[in-house]
Image (cartoon, rainbow, N blue to C red; front, side):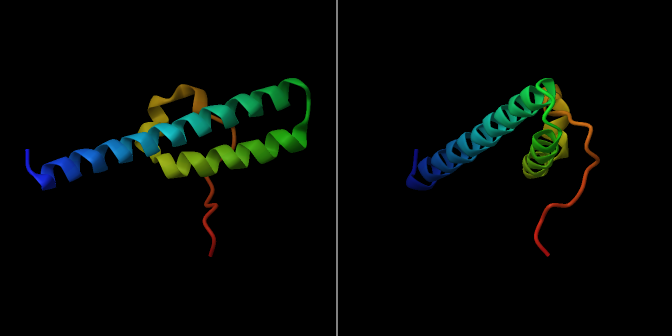
Length: 82
């Protein structure tokens, strides 16, 4: 295995680790959103909905469809700065 092959394997592993971290973050936000909804905190629920939508946009549409626990009632909006 050459140096470029090792670099590619390390880059692929780094990208996968980053993706796994974003998925974990999305799951934590989804859990916090559910708890806020259960204890009837509408403002916190709305804020967490927006945070979850922002993370889902980072993940991409294809991956978000596979993760059912990341669904929220908020319509898809752009949260990128203008």
